[in-house]
Length: 115
Image (tube, rainbow, N blue to C red; front, side, top):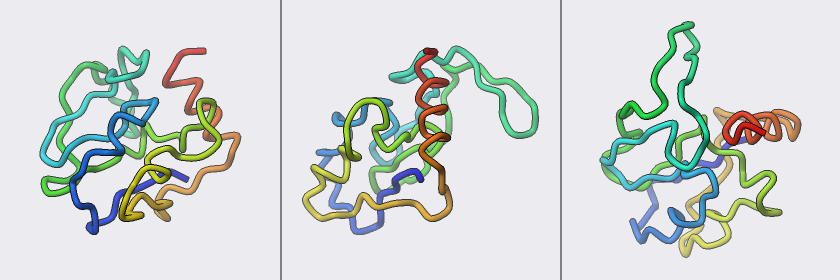
């Protein structure tokens, strides 16, 4: 499952540089699928295709946030999610809305990094 940042976040920023997929952003900052990945375009759930370098709306305006579509729980990079390992207030937790199997996380990592 993807990791999420709760509203207990103190906006310290310790998690952001630890993410191998560049899935963590400061509150209010737009994000891109191409940030930290090899994605040049992404097919959305509705079948539309967007440019990977197109700015996307922030998930949160107040706190650091994790883009669930880019989060692999550090699969293929580290043994545990690094955001959770460095978070001083333990607000990087599993996101119950995005449960994924190990096989799905492996496939997402391959998709993000074109392996």
